[in-house]
Amino acid sequence: WVDGEKLSQSTADDVADLVNLGVVTYLTQLLDTGFFHADPHPGNMLRAPDGRLVILDFGLMTQVTDDQRYGMIEAIAHLIHRDYERIGDDFVNLDFIPPGTDVKPIVPALARVFDAALAGGGAKGINFNDLAADLAEITFSFPFRIPPYFALVIRAIGVLEGIALVGDPQFAIVDEAYPYISRRLLTDRSPRSKAALRYMVYGEKKRFDVDRVIDMLQAFERFAAVKKLASGTFVPAEPKSLEVDAERATGLVRLEGDAPIVRRSVEPEPDADVARDALEFFFGADGEVFRDFLLEELAASLDAGARSVARPPGLALATPRVRTFLAKLS
Image 1: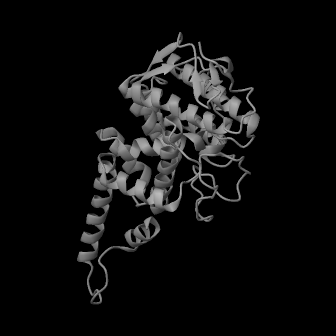
Image 2: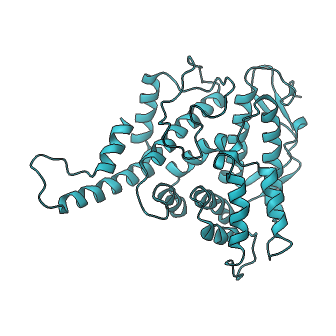
Image 3: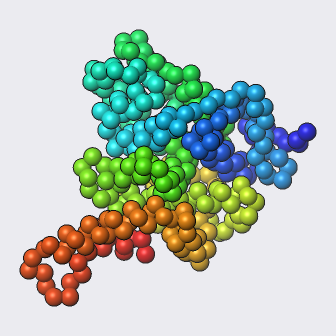
């Protein structure tokens, strides 16, 4: 027996944080373990008296294959860059489109659906219930179907989104999911995940996106705070906002001047703690993927700098994009 109140009816100050934790919990099931609780209706999610998140009733579960899990990560990277041709191929891998189907006629329809979904402020403005309904419309005109596992995923996401929107009308599920996605891309050693990280940072134009990397590192910091909340070791600091350049709107990180944000206890930790956590990540086992990725970029930049001619004496060999990145990272 577990005591608690329905998360959707709780008036506690930490409900928004518990919803955020719920998002990470379900993404971990969906993209890490592949064994997914598919019935998270409001009666199955409680807030315990000690502030823990309680999930009940594991009677309805679904399994997600490795190929589907990596396919979703790849699709997210392609969606962020609005690379709809690759999303057409992603949908084949995710069982939306039968193998062997010519996806070219379907791509314009997918582009219209996702352009409409992204129109309200980028990826963070997506309403997944509306998106699922628009995708269902495509099934009437093309060989396109909503696979059973994804219908359950959409249902779970819709429930979490509905609970959160009661207390925060500006809640965006993608905004809350981005810390987990960043952590996954920055730490997963599989070849497909590394390729997705490279695409996320470089995009189709193959240009190193400094701001994207900074966004991902800041999101990773948020994930670390949520993880501490789950373990009970997180001690909230005085609220302060991250310094984010208002001129670079990626559509994934909530920027100053966007919609108002309700108070959340999962805020960045004091600078000393953040620095310690960052160093532990960078030099620890989890930082191996990011270290290798950064060193490859530095090596390529230094090689390009060494090939330049007529360089004034004493000028650093790193290219401007790397110097900018290192300056922002510091």
